[in-house]
Image 1 (cartoon, rainbow, N blue to C red):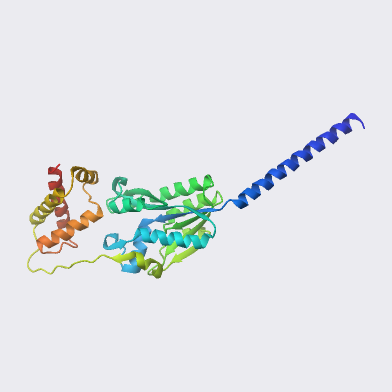
Image 2: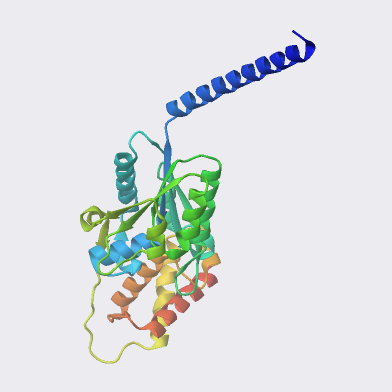
Length: 304
């Protein structure tokens, strides 16, 4: 055998050895992948849930008029995902909501303390509309998909602005499953979002009903003219004085960054107590409601 033939024979043997080694590595990788459980995460647009479930169960999209048992709902979503994704393990539940200056409300603090739940906050504008939530969802979905942290994503939402988030995750091989609340009428999820998802699931009224309830509203029947702005303002100051007397300086200071807005539970408590003291309803009277808050804030700031 000449030298050229020997060289070719040697190169062929080396190439065959390398191919065999590569095949062995691929076999090991496939075995490892087969042994590794798939992982899923649940992404919840809280604004969508409050509006859709509130309208379906309680007949209103106003989240101030409804109570949502977020802990119970999240547990139900986790159970549903366990049935849908089989042996897949849960990474966590992401709960997206809005808050003034991204400061957690008492309700959001409770949700954040739940196991396997991460609360992510966008801003609220002057009209109580969420801002920045869609970009948070896209960032999380894309990051988890890029790092292969999840194989499936259950997305509870309906806004068309979520389409880029779905596309970004799918670009890294993640399957995105769109879950929606049954619509009271028409459709509460954008068509482009429905078209882009890998699968769809509807959570009906029976699923939502245990976790949504309408807050009782006391209607006050009064005779004569409504109270004046000054009377309402003074009532707000009176309530603030009593309210401040029951709390320490740290609790009071925590409210100040949100001025002129009050956390929902505090605002509701203020309204109910003012109506009791005045013997008159302030529902639907924006000017008097502002006077009430002005009186509350004025007294509260003077106490610090």
